[in-house]
Image 1 (cartoon, one colour):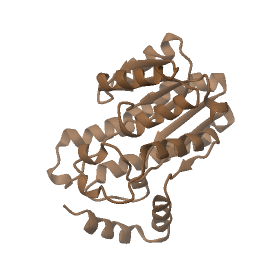
Image 2 (tube, one colour; image 1 turned 30 degrees about the vertical axis):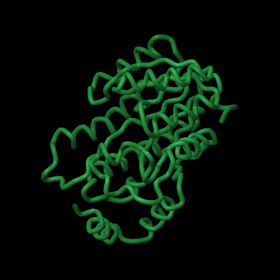
Image 3 (cartoon, helix red, strand yellow; image 1 turned 135 degrees about the vertical axis):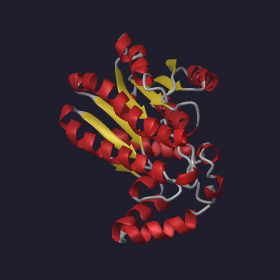
Image 4 (cartoon, helix red, strand yellow; image 1 turned 45 degrees about the horizontal axis):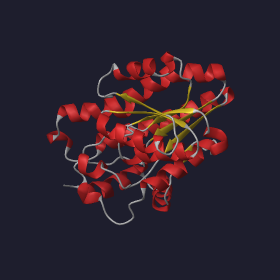
Length: 259
């Protein structure tokens, strides 16, 4: 990874906590220069101070990807200001657990806006310069939820399915331009996701460490692997859902996840 990433600018969205912060730390460890973006400026500044103390060059760009103008603002503050962003990490995302009929409409739409629209918008802004330079790395954080419908997390799982297929399509499109694209599909991970999504009941045994997820995701990106599932149980799940009818899987998941 150090051979690929050292000295290059990496933009990490959702870098204030969880997998995003872990990805930033791993990129810094591999010698990359960091642009950190998220809503929570205090957390970004704390992470930036930590990484600077280790000798990493870091910039902070506060942005809320719920706002449709945020991707353009991030672009203008980085590539538009003359910083060649070679590594784009689309990590920012959110979910919401519960019955769809009783959920807050804005929360459902926010998942589509942040998990899908912002990913497409940011990627479209940064890819042309990567193509021109004939180098680049794009990591899209999807989920093991992208392999099957997940009742009571219906919108979240659908958005992550979008992310995974978007990454796979781009990987094929951009391969001849020297750009590598990877869909990182973690399962339950040590992060704030469970609490923020109201899904604390799913936090159980087998939750993976964020540093492990980050290291395996970036290693896969460096070697050009198009999909990486960083834990064994996730790989088993992805295999099983390919072998069984989707109706069976959805029936089982609905009963297991029912509030």
